[in-house]
Image (tube, rainbow over all chains, first blue to last red; front, side):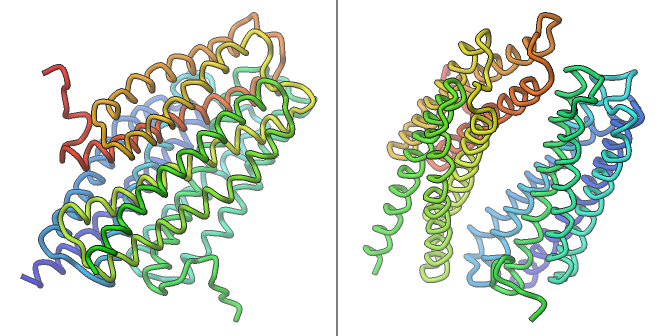
Length: 220
Length: 220
């Protein structure tokens, strides 16, 4: 019985990694849809989110079931709670990719991103992709050092987010209100996506070290 | 030992209710700060959030401690997990009130909300306040019917949110880009605040009935 139980625990980790793969693919497509006004990609992101939600529900059910049947303690219990939290974060990241895709769809056939901001948004999309990819690796490998790297990625995202706002609010802005509103919300979605990736990694770091990421100083 | 344990469980519920009181007060002040360009209120919201975060951390620590020491099962275990989730949601609601307060502070001495949108934003603030107040009552009383009412409040919030966007994107909009950006983000903060209140209530409904809120039809 314990063996089947530990197989189920491993299965949870596999499912979380699968979620990060789906969300990474959604984020890649959502960023491209936004930049290139690609309606087909936007629709794909929107329709594929169901799959992410389904795995999230499966993970929740497995966790509750394992808790009820196995009365896990100590590390196993912490792992189940971490799985629940990570699954929630990744599911939310999928929603944020959908919000970006819907912005692209609403502005189609125009691009939601004017030429002078394309490079910034491209970079935000690339960082978002990198962060969800790293979050997946961290879940699979329990690599604490990589987990802590996400803080640096998040700082980069915050810098680009500010750059985006500076452009919108500059006297040189020539595109009017509607694109400004879309871009300010898109910036917020990217930024929240990055925050959730950091949370996912923090959960793994906490599981492995028993310490909150903020208390760890790797330089020591 | 079991008695002290159940006292600790009750203590968790009291702490959650206390968080909702603090966040309700923050939301009331943040809405007023936004509408009336009241810098003092905005600063209060920003500095008081620390208290909400502190209780959230205390709840997390108590939950982990109880899980490790008491190996709770069945309903007690579900209650602890629900407490963890609700605490996370309410903490996030506090952050959203802070975002609103920071918007007010950035635009001071002007109001971030032009006259023709004051009534809409006032109503959004009132609904947000009502929702967090109800969430607190639902936690304290386990009143399922009130828990399910929050869905209706959320629909109202969504309607007002759309109304706000319609105004920003109308050809009659005369206030330029910066207020439009601030208001679109503020609208998003109110809307997310409402979503989190719904989640809090859903957790209680699930605890009491064992069913997810979406599956319950009170009319039957």
